[in-house]
Image (tube, rainbow, N blue to C red; front, side, top):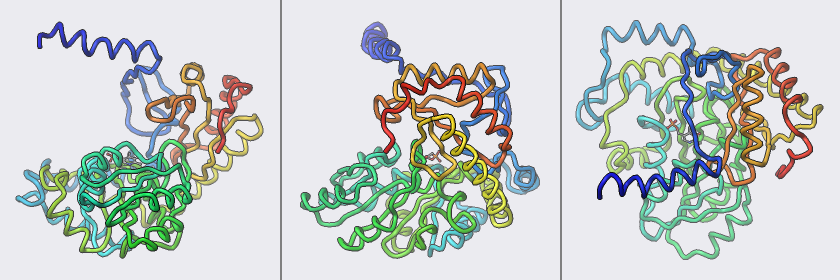
Length: 399
Ligand SMILES: *Cc1c(COP(=O)(O)O)cnc(C)c1O
């Protein structure tokens, strides 16, 4: 194929995307993570980061990295099964397992890859991977890699999940859900999902990217909120890139499952271990979590209350969320872009989330609140929202 043919083939697709208002441009940020961000050369108050506890710029974590790097250098050199599994990685895995109350934990390069592994390793040809409809893209991609059958149930709808089970002929069940839904902010009915998995002798896998560090005592995650842990038939995936402010991910569970991942997960076996500097940062972040999680989350909870009450007063349509993810539902994709642009002119960075990340006609502003924000910043955002959101057109769906 000549380049001209590629231009015809890809160019057409790209023009279509641009015409439908779904083209995405990257913004260049010139600042470290804080409540302010320099973006495309302008300073804005940033309400778009997943750095929920404000740890991405934490000085104690940064200095733990810089003091350790002289000893450990910059790269792990190889995969875990060759020579990249350093004592630091081992220590982090043990600490993470203890932190979430699991027998073992296994480090992955990132949450995306951990989810590829989680979905593809345990399901055989006659097994059913049953997902919540709003599960993260990486879980879906993992299901596509798996040889198991892939079905979905309506968001949070246990009746529909059961119906899918009853109408499918399968050997084993693997039930998979986000703990906190990344674009909605609501929490999965984890206790009920566990009962369903128990009833059919299945596994329950929770993607806790937005729950680990945020929910439960000391931030153990969304399972802890229900008095559960990644033990027995329950596995969890946590990321180190959101509330922990760094990079990397882990799967926690019983040794049986973790050892199976070590042996068979291609996203684990065929990739270089995390850089030691990153692991040093993660160890330091866990220490900060132990000491400061509850005080930092107390502050975030206060911001959440402030934002919800304020939104209520000015008539914004929020989603059903108690977490730091507080999306404002707009509906129309181009209207969401307009509102986001006008907020930017007023000094706030709040990106519009559109299809295919969320369903068509459910475009929203994904506001995230973090420990770095002040109450004053949240109040200022509310004032700006009241000025720019056209409330007559804003309510499409609230459930
Ligand atoms: C961010 C995210 C991931 C991916 O994690 P990375 O470490 O960024 O690759 C997986 N699942 C959910 C729900 C996420 O929000």
